Image (tube, rainbow, N blue to C red; front, side):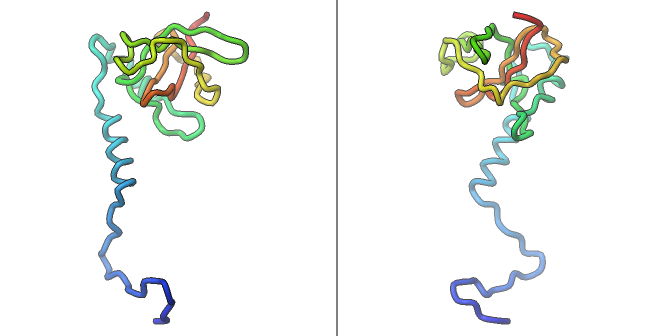
Length: 135
């Protein structure tokens, strides 16, 4: 074995695994939390598979789940959409105002079973937006 300065020259024994790092562990916990999030009261359980099929266009990661996605009022303003993110629908941390939808988070899907615009709001941002049947 050649000695390389500044480099660990120890070999791992077969079967030894690289330990989880804190960022990796947090990421896995976050994905698990999304998978087991509870839907809001009165949610239509038959829509859960559709909500779970929503994926961010630029990463392919899930937008969220039925627990984070809601139907919303929306409008077209110039070259983008705005969605009304209210506290009654999204909780006390919601801004209760019109929020611009990032164009990169618009899902161009025609299979929206709700007929209304849908926003997936998570950690203070619009993760995904699906346009409704019409403005």
